[in-house]
Amino acid sequence: MAKEETRHINILNEGGRLPEGRYLLIELFCTDPTCDCRRVFFNVTHVESDQLQAVIAYGWEDREFYRDWFGREAQGFIDELKGPSLNTASPQSPLAPILLKKVESVLEDEEYVDRIERHYEMFKHAISDTPGHAK
Image 1: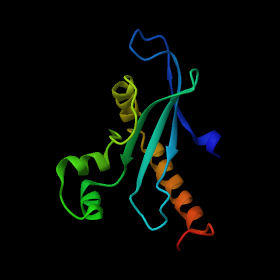
Image 2 (image 1 turned 45 degrees about the vertical axis):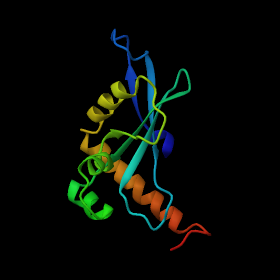
Image 3 (image 1 turned 90 degrees about the vertical axis):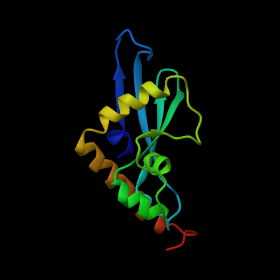
């Protein structure tokens, strides 16, 4: 399923700063079975060079959810939790800000956001059933 449902962005010769090619949006989720952060991290990888170009965080819930989940209002931090944003704790290439704009456009597709939510639920269910993880 992962191969069929992994989103990618195709960049043709657009005269911009992004090298041509395909950029995979590889979904990563929190591995803590007790955490319900409802966020995804996209490792944006340029297929042709096999290089990680950006790590983009995205939470699909509203700001109130993330404020409640975090436990207090912290404007900049809540905005980063909700995203989409470049994950500050991850390495970023010089192309990352451009890729963030591309991913923001991709996330306008409500069906894709629904798919991410479904993948999150499947992942959380799978790790809660894994020996060694708390239920």
